[in-house]
Image (cartoon, rainbow, N blue to C red; front, side, top):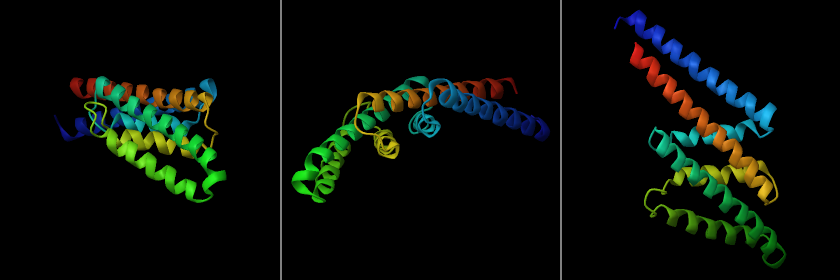
Length: 162
């Protein structure tokens, strides 16, 4: 393949991936009314380990687990703060760290980056622990994972044609 053809292929791939990201962001914000940044958590998680649909879904499951752990941590902090004061944060963070770091030993679902992306997403959302918060962040992450998968499929097809 000539240098010019390679540049043209790379440009097509970049424009295609950018279009997928734009569509995912627009659907997230305007149709589903979920945070665009949380959609990109799902997009990022897709690439944390393996770049195929199976691994992308496993990575998403790890993000969702991280969101769930974040919800539990938020609830635990709320319950423990009246009893422990500022030490509640220390106790909860230690407990969460033990749980998440222990999860790395689970076969297949051992993506620490995915777990921490889910935790970060929950705490960044600044929402009270609730099923609604889980659903919102989970939906956003799922859109991002799906969009990343589509971008990869389009990239592979464009590269194969070149």
